[in-house]
Image 1 (cartoon, helix red, strand yellow):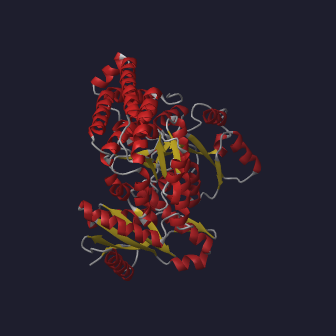
Image 2 (spheres, rainbow, N blue to C red; image 1 turned 90 degrees about the horizontal axis):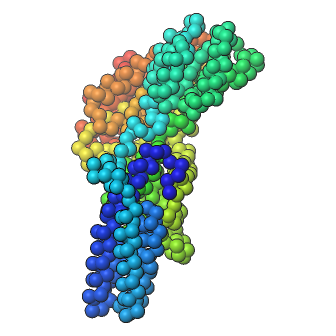
Image 3 (tube, rainbow, N blue to C red; image 1 turned 60 degrees about the horizontal axis):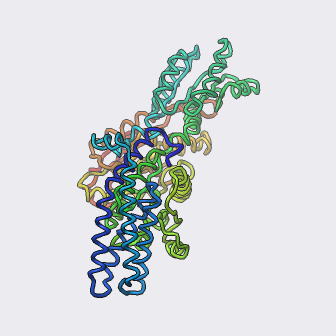
Length: 563
C-alpha cells in the first residue's frame, strides 16, 4: 500500500493504520447506536437516519483509506440502504432490517480480523507514545535557510568582494578550498550552488573532472555549478558545460547579474512548499492524508469542524483545499458553496474525496464551480501527491501573474493594499502590531537619464531581490510603480521596523552597480508608520507617505518614523 515512500514515512503511516484499527470497536459501537436509534423511531426521522448514514459513511471512507476494502464495502452497503429510506422518507422494511443486521455482523467480524492482522511490535510502538505527526519545518526539503553558496578558493582577486556582495542578499556564503570541505557542505545542506572561476581550474589537473563527477553522481539533485571566467569564448563555455556547469558568467561580474543567475539556479529547488488545507471530520483519515502530503514536502492545515474553515482560510492562506464529501451537519458541496461566496476564495481549488462512486453525485458536487475535481477512495499516495501538486502548481502560477508586478515579482499596488487590510484585520484579532514602510529610490530619474531605463530596471530588480532575501516570509512586499515600494511587517513594532529598514538601507547602499563603463551606488529613503497608532489602512499609508516626504527633505538615504 505504501510502495515508493521513504521507510520513515511508511512506518508513520503504519502507526496511523494501527491506531485506526484500534478505533474500530468504538466506530462500530457508534454505528450500532445510530442503527438502534433508527429502529426505535416510530416514524421517519431525518436527523436519526442521517446520523446512521453518516456513521456508516465514515466507516466506508476510512476503511478504503487504510486498505480495509471489506470493511469499506460492507459499511457502504449499510449506508446505501439507509440512504434509500431517507430519500423515500420511510422506515426500514423487515427485509432491510435483516439485511442490515447481517451486514453489521459481518462488519464486526471484519473488524476483529483487522485487529488480528496488526503486529504486536507495531502495537507496542503505539503504546510507547510514538508520534504520528513528526513533520517539522526542518524536515521539509529545500527551505530558504538552505540556500547555500560555496565559493571555490582561487587566486581570483574578486573572491572576497564577491562573498561580501552576495552576502548582502541573505545567502549563506562560504569559501571552500578542498573537495572534502565541499562534500561536507553537500552532506549538510539541501541545496548548494558552487561558484568557481574556471580560468584557474583549467590549470589544476583533474579538478574539473571531479566537479563533473559530483554533479553526475551522488549529489546530482542538490548541487548546481556557476562558472565564472574573465573570457567570454565558445571553448570556455563548452568546457564549463562538459564539466557540470549549470550556468556561466563572464566578466565584469556585476552583482545584480550574479544574483539573477543564483536565483535561476535555486528556482524550483527552493520554492516555498505548497500549502494544503484538509477538511474531514475523521481524525485518523485527516492524519493519514496530512502525513502523505507532508512527506512530499507540503505544509498542511487540518480542519475537523467545518465551522472553523473560514477562520483557517483567512489565517493560513492555503493554496488548495482537500475536502471530504460527507460530513455531519454540513456536506462538502455545501461547504464549498459557502467558501465560493467569499470573493477572496473564489479561485482556490477544491478537491472532493469520497468513496462515492455515483457519477451523477460526483458531477453534482462539481456543478456551479463549487468543486474542481472529485477523487474516489482509495487513492494511492503517489497519485494523490501528483494530483495535489499539479493543481497547486497551476493556481500558484495563475496567482503570480495576476497579483505580481511583472518587472520585480513583488505584489502589485492593488494586491499590496489588499494584503495590508488583511494583515491589519489579523493583527486586531491577535492583538499584535504592524509596521508599514514606504520606500522611494533616491535620484532614480538621474540613473535612468544617465544609464538608460534598462539599467534602471536592473536596479529596481536588485532592490526587490534584496527585500525578498532579507525579509521574513510573513512580511508582504509590493511595488507601487516607478521607483516606489511598500512593505508590511507583521507582528513588528516601530522600533524593530526602524532597525530592519535601516539594515536594508545600509546593505543596498553598498551594492555596486555598473553601467556605461562606470561603477555607481544607489540609496533609498523610507518613511514608516505603525498600527495600532494609525488604526486603518488608509491612515497608515498616509502617515508612512508623510514620513517618506520628511526623509527626502532631511537629505535622503534615511528612515524616518511618522510623527
